Length: 265
Image 1 (tube, rainbow, N blue to C red):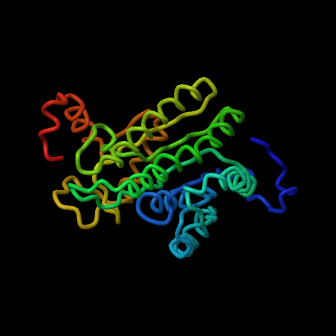
Image 2 (tube, helix red, strand yellow):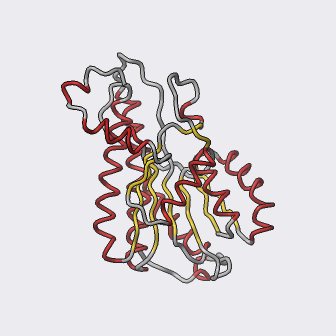
């Protein structure tokens, strides 16, 4: 990753002593809650998502928080499927923040899929956002943190990645692949002082689960954000959110395939 001086890019960084963070998928839900929490701790946070209006609202919400904490929130509209935009945008934001110690990838989609629906267009979009976007953003992050020899990467995956469930095959696939990619990054970057944390949430009260039946252990996005940041700071490699979902994941992984395919999950 090239590193030009901020003055060369025509932007002025925030105070060098301020910690920098970048959150992809920040317009609502878990991502927005993480931005608000980091801003309250005095971070300079770059918040990215597709919806400019939602980002502008998040920025307005954070103004009072930042006045009290000394933090700052920068917003940029960006669709993670546009991978070609990422290298220049990443470098611009690193220069603008002045430092970078934390990157959170929280972008994801889960469109409704009918029980007898096999929609290639939907499935490829899921893979492009959930997996392709993750790779597009975390590759330059990994390169930057490796050269810096420090930093934390957080990937917000899902317990859905633990097994291939009949309800939404492409979504499960995207999260399983994301888990493997994050594990590989962890193994590659660990010797360079970089921590990679995989988060596997259960049901979180966000737009993604609205209208779904059979939800249990539902938690709010702010509670999820608190647990995610705590896991990242504790240097956890993999953390289920809330933690009790770990036992569910363990049981699911132990069910033999011939029996698992009979379950309506």
